[in-house]
Image (cartoon, rainbow, N blue to C red; front, side, top):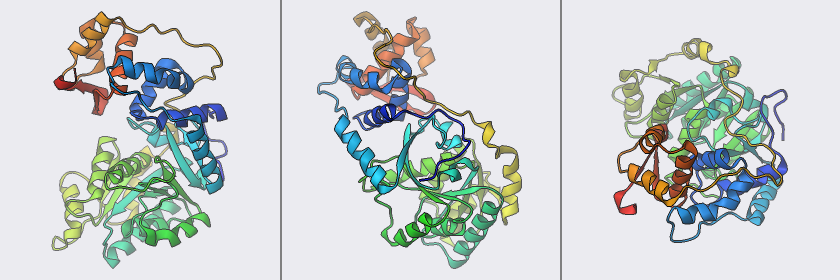
Length: 383
């Protein structure tokens, strides 16, 4: 599998990659929790050792399941035999724009031409049951966007997604999957996979190998599409559609959102027309997109890494657990209304490290709720 020559970042060692995979595959550990664990303990290996005790101190009544070394090795071996590999958030082949998204996955699996990840990207989404003219216009946009030096990102769905992918295979396209890389959806797009392997296409997923996509996995995939692209183009989207979910994520991430207007008589255009009413840029050709993207399309706008760790052997950072009095103060400061962590630190007067550690304990015990902007809350009946 090709890698990106000259890309910026810090490569994980094999030992670190194994520990990262074990940590993100463990129960309760999502991207935000993963980041906090690495920041507190310095490495995934030490975080793995601490998980059971943290969960117990947080009030969990059952032990947290920690992914075993054997499970992670099996998945790494499967990825290798499948022609794929795992890329960490601080490594050269991790999409630069995605690094900046709050809660970006610490590990992604990729298969294909990795250099396409170093190009600035534009996402394109739209109706699965698109019209012939909609598919033709999507292909035209993708082709011209690709020639302008952008990779095209989409979700591998039928309709607009497929048209965009096919038109940008030679210039670079990224398909974000809702399931594992070995479980592409829909099945009728399997011929497109062959075209990916023979051109400048790349498959990407944060889900484990063997994971069959479920309905609730598609919004998660849409979030990655919006995060990888510096801009998003919507073509033929109904009033209630996944494309509008992607557009909402793109807006929240500060991306430029473009929409192709359609007939008011076509329900497939209701969502795209609504986006234009709400402030999305109306476009009628590829130049509209290329000119608007020019000021924000430089890769060096993005820092090379967000999560990294040093190589530790036997040295462990000293971190004494908070006392019961301190833990009670922190829990009492929480409530059902989301609060900023800095406010909790000021309210309790405790060291930031103690507050973050107790929040980690509550998180791993399943008692903490994380919200956008890094805010947290807790239900009264869980206290």
